[in-house]
View 1: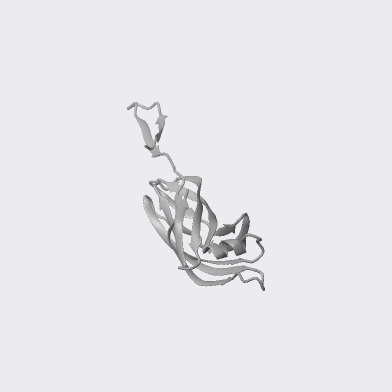
View 2: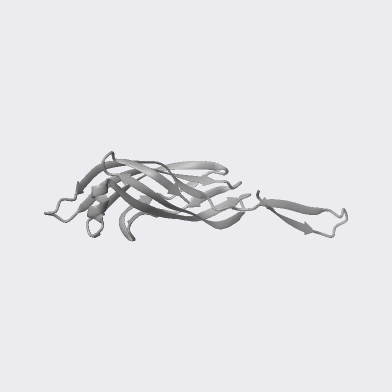
Amino acid sequence: MSSIHCHCSYTTNPNNTSLCYSIPARKNPKVRFGSLTVEALTLSSNASTQPSLSMRLNTQVTIKNKNFGGFKFSESAISIVYRGNVVGSGVIPGSGVGARSTKKLNVTVDVESNKDPFLSRDLNSGRVTVSSHARLEGRVRLLMIVKKKKTGSMNCTMDVDTRTRAVTNLNCM
């Protein structure tokens, strides 16, 4: 349910007219993964070398704008985190999303991890759990006059199956 902000201007003139207009409440856009594929996966978990994980994630980031005005945002970063350490990042290019519409952007994220003591255990299990974070800052423009700063953010967790190169249990908030 959205609220509406009403603004009225009363004037004293011979016709006793007044001007009222309403502005729908502005909402933060929703940022999510639309699709996610694993490419170029390279693993090393044998006893003679330090365990390592290298992969490229091809993602489709969706930005859903429920506002009655367009949302323009600047270039942002998307981070991949493994056990509290940033292991990869990508760039979400600055763009805009029309009123009450969704924009899909393709983003590539390169991931490298080799310094975590639990990596060998996770690689041997065939499942590596990572999280992703992104924050889009921009402005919603209503009625060609009103501009309001809004922020869309994404926090997701997912499992990467290192045997099948599939992303499972994708959960975004």
